[in-house]
Length: 190
Image (tube, rainbow, N blue to C red; front, side):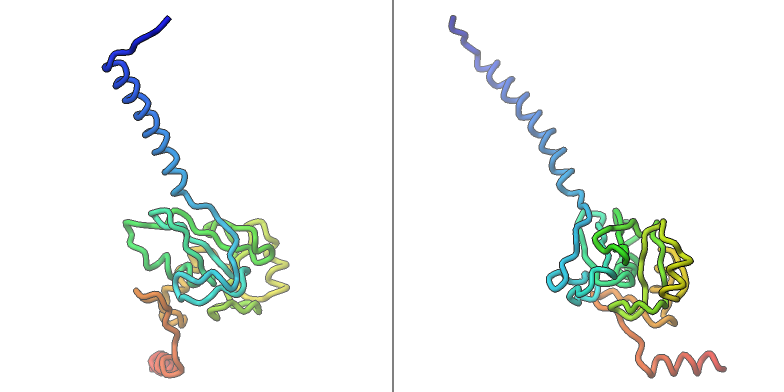
């Protein structure tokens, strides 16, 4: 038994198939734009903020932009300064920080526990390190010193020009010079 399809039947079937492919393709392309954390590659990855080559993944961070691009950072302060510089209309989808005690483990930046001013020397000199939310903070403070802070505290720290780290619109942070520090000290004395 031979079946003949009319031109109308063939076109209708093709249109239906193309519609299903388009919907399926849209779903696949949306999934492909959703970045997930990946290990930093020391010596190969570079910081999206200061452009330094990443040497120590324990201090690293990842940011997924509003458009789904995965950016790498050599330090928490660089990631925070980058986020501070984003337009309010394009906040990042997510920010991850490396758990210092297990750098292959990524922690949501808003849930991490941070030490600031500890004996652990971060690449950009702010001595900021992150740990998983369930880390024993008493032990961390005893072992490393410093003070505890949150992601909001980290963001405030990089926004404070008196603290010595001024994020700029460009890719590189500006560091205080000795003259800047002396001028601030003189201004505070008056």
